[in-house]
Length: 121
Length: 107
Image (cartoon, rainbow over the protein chains, first blue to last red):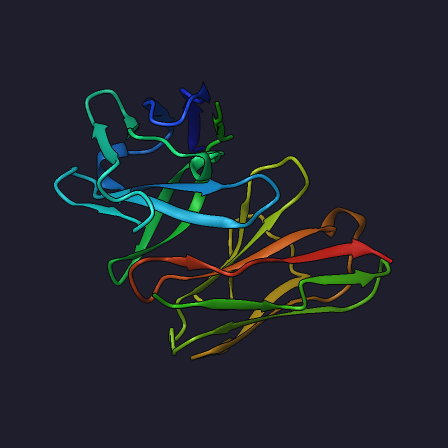
């Protein structure tokens, strides 16, 4: 069974940084693209960023491009999201998800429990 | 970016009723459409992918249909555990995009 454990969230002030982690188990981690999806309080789901299995290819939503960096350590089965220059609108639960690729694009069949990021002064 | 529009935003239903949720794409996404269920305080769960294929352990009362720009999630007989928010997601084009969700609440 796939298990994704998100961590690293917290309360930060605008302009500060935070690094999220997602520890994966129960899957050949390096074979799967991974994705961060977020959900603002009381709102819907928003794709944030994806990374290929090897880590060679990364993708970002327009709202986070240039501020967030996705990476992975396949030797430790861990996914990361480095978030810089945080804004109030980045406040959300961040979910690590496993990508099932069809034609190169993803749907998400496994989700972490989520980690809450709150950006407020 | 493909815009996904779900309707209605909220649906009030009695247990045992048949429920139909709609999802529309701003352009054809062929059959690259998934549905997720999110119960209050819980993590989203994959229900359906490729328009109509049930994910692992999803009960048979859930079914998906449609193509191109119009998609439907049907719950044949609503159970108490099915009250939740349902999201559609297209993955034909980058970036993957979600609909705004339909909340199924108790009537």
